[in-house]
Length: 389
Image 1: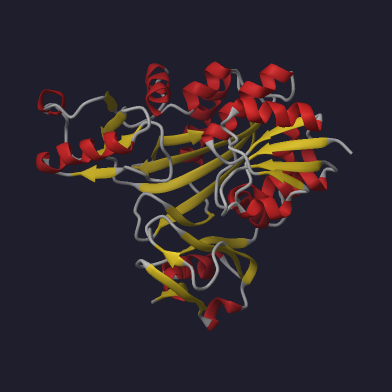
Image 2: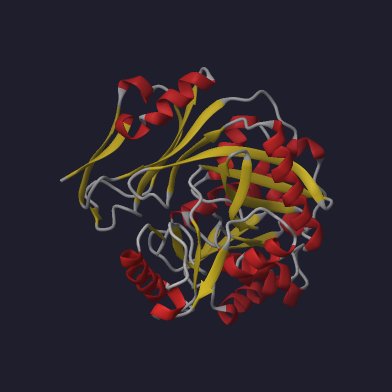
């Protein structure tokens, strides 16, 4: 049995772990965090830091690894590409392309030069008044190298700007932040599968937030205008062509305003929090298997990306409304029978000390119609919620 090494072992990596096992691999996961429950699903795991290339190299050599698969994280992807080039394993983009895509400023510059719709912005490395005085408001401040809404803030006044910049610089790993125009529109996601240098498949979803306005909690499939989708695809295919992207996942978030899709974030890894299952449950395609095959350079059967009947699915991340001890998780009778998959990330009695980021669990619900799904999405945090004491 061939061995697949996944640089990751969190719950976000479960779709890849299960897909690799289904394809016949002996799956080994990496990660030194105690809460990495993905390790339970793999055949073997090493509790080591997957950003330590020396330690990972020793595992590759000792286990005689056949294929490398990046977990759901930018660092995991970058290190997998580096190791893939070193050991001549896998089918990955160039390091230059990976660095452009996963550096918010480099990617913005790349898009602006090509006329691709992105918010205007500037890179900042200090909070000096002379640097900030020409910033137009409202704006959004974000660290260049972090995801999940960490350090992000919408600023509406000059008084707020300096403190927001100072905070973003403090949490940034490289003392660089991005300040860009704030576009007040609808937050959407588009998960693309690159195939032979083109878009082989695309899935558009609505991204909803809860108390943390910069962290997506719920998502579901939606339809957008053909004209808008056409503009988006045109821009994405420019990116694919100019960066010579290999087959595989390309996930992006965009703001839709006045029928213009402004790309705000992109990644070449799978989207997080079991989003691959949202795609699969909603469409019937075998997204995770196609991703694994793409990373290892295997032939991708077109049937893997062929849609079946669409279903009305919500992916919901259960969050808390405050810090405290998790006593229970309550599900309203209106949706109790609609849960088709559930994964709980912490046990009852666990202390929650960062309710704006810490997830309690992830559930998938299936509805009979688009209308029923959208109505449930509007009040999902009232239908499924955690009890904190």
